[in-house]
Length: 354
Image (cartoon, rainbow, N blue to C red; front, side, top):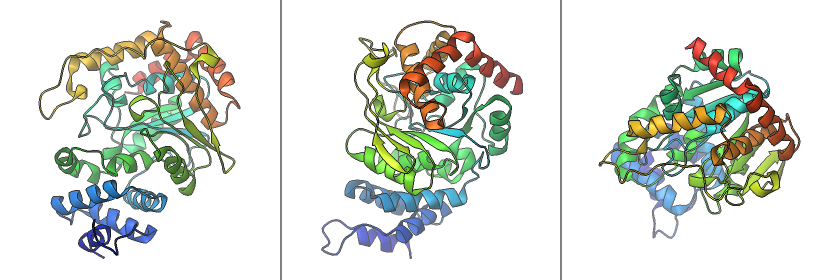
């Protein structure tokens, strides 16, 4: 079945238009990744699905088609938590998932972050930006990140290294401008055995996100609606989430005030005005240095909103891993990891491997 035929099924204004079945969604995304479809056909399909609204079955079909073509690392690593933030990055708050992942690894979790650099249309700051600023780059090699996780309990891998076809779709993403299902699927390339901490955009998609995590067979997981759809909860207000635990879906709201983590403002991110056409915050070397310095300051013990957001995120990772039962326990364990220097030790060991 061609992508052209599936576009007709989705066609707006048709009386017989409908959602795709799981099999149709699988075939559609496999065709997109095959390189045989034109950019125009791919863009048309992605926009139609976005405008219609994605179903759980469609997302599962897309994700499984992508997983079938990808080299997914850490498939047999026990007690792994995979962080799945938005790959087009952040513009207004720093990406603190590297700091949080190092803290959780220092507390005993195994952490894999899936990310990429300057992904359109946003081209924002990501974990890759932070590592660049720290002088410890992410890897494009799934085998290498397995080695890193095995030796340090922490690793960051490029999703386009795992699935090179995503790089070939960057022109489509730049031209379409709006977020498409590609932005969701790339976050779902986690190993099935791993627990996941997944960032979800605002609105009613939170339930869909955690149902997809469940349907894909992950043993545990948390979907959370942090600022800019990230995995970092707000320190100004409640952040909504849903946890998958023991096959049950349970609301999980993060109230920073409950843990003494409330701040008047979110972690700082300087604004330099609109970037040049075709660029984003992730292209700005000053901002890359800033987010790396922010991460270093958190690891060095500096107090403030960035530390609070890091500890809350690390607590979510530890809860997803099953190391703690409650977020309060997770915050306490994360603070001990940070203040003892265990998180900094993980970064040092990672640097030695590079």
